[in-house]
Image 1 (cartoon, rainbow, N blue to C red):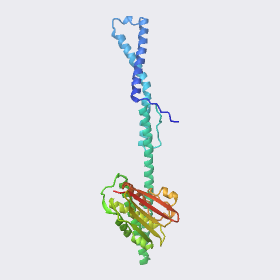
Image 2: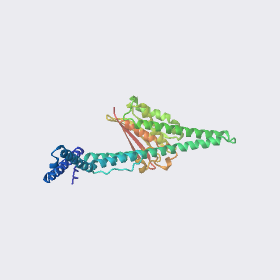
Image 3: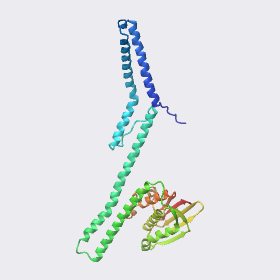
Image 4: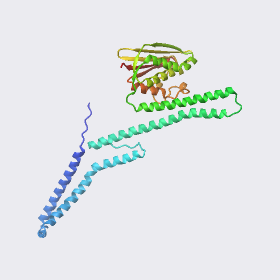
Length: 347
């Protein structure tokens, strides 16, 4: 059964009605008063100055109309006063305020609904901002605490050269972690304010994947990971600088969560309609709950991942792929592995 359409009164029409009934009531009462005065001959003594009864009746009419208008205007003024009070509360940072909806007057009802929507959005933004600050603070705190701790240890004169070098390596690693975190935050912030990618050009997508592998060679070589590459020759139109960040982040993730001696397969091919790239590892996999939040800022799906990364790499991947007009899908099974599939329309 369809919902009955709500009937509204137009604000302009309401204002006209207020004026009309104020005038009508004033006229009726004024006529009654004039008739009363005439009936009892109260105007006879004022024949010498006929303006006096006219002025008197106009004054009475004005008073009656003003009183009625003041009472009637509350229908319009009160919701506006509540709206003003609500705006004042929001300006003070209170996002729990709301206005009563389902008003009879259409414009006031729309105003109330839009105000409530605005408050909900502002509250959501405030929550995201607070979460972002908390997450950034946490992510910065860990490497900074590590650096501070090992710098303090380096001041000891009893350290062997090997111990000093180990501490320096740890400090350098924490410094790189901070640098990567800062860089990713800046990139994501920039991409969030873009509607399309700029600086596009034609480049070899398969060659870019190879460059990403060379960039990460020390990592996959150290873990003795076997690479299985099936890369067709693909000419791609996009932002070359940002696209390589997609492959570096996805391949780096695959390396991190694949055991020593594991395997990573990368397949890239092109059809008449789309370009597809899949990156598959036989690592620890991602839980169902983890997959639901995988591309959220700072989200890390499993306890095993807490020691690696900062939860921004996949967020960056999602933003770049979306702005490139593509999609990214994830298929994963715990203990079996994960596949990230990128799909882009052919240019």
